[in-house]
Image 1: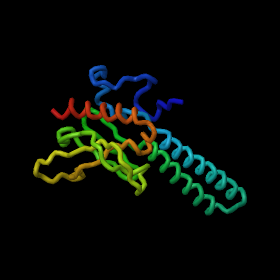
Image 2: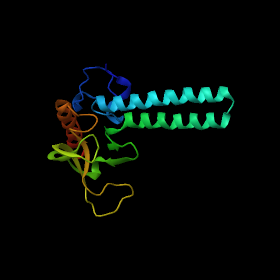
Image 3: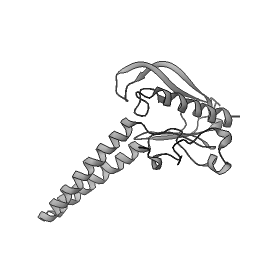
Image 4: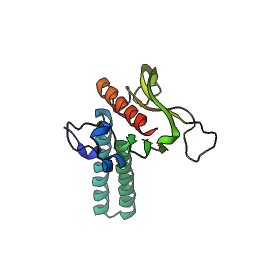
Length: 190
């Protein structure tokens, strides 16, 4: 079941080629791929846990322990925020630059700060765990312009892998997403 609210594209067969995008669409931040089943499943499990926590807060409040109910409701709100952040994680592109959204941290580089974006064969982490397997990764190399910029990534950064939560068992989707991100970089790094 497609979930268009998780990505910017609204049509199931949306084409992300640069020439077909209108000028105002290029200005919006967009994720050029759909979130994978592992990411969506993890978010769904967190939201299920939050619903149980909210029901527990209701039961505790009816029992008369309002401070405990407030703590439980606050914990549920934190779990909901974590689930939404997990679903938002990924690589986003626009005419302004490239944004790597993680669960904890987000970094944004303007296109002029990017030296190259390329797909490489290397050991990659399996679902973000310490275990590594041989796979493909989309690597971003920032431009070395000699001056230190606040928040700029200074070493090569892995944006996507074919074994992360979005592309595990979906190698064709990884290839098309990497091609689209490389096309955005080639278009706007000039």
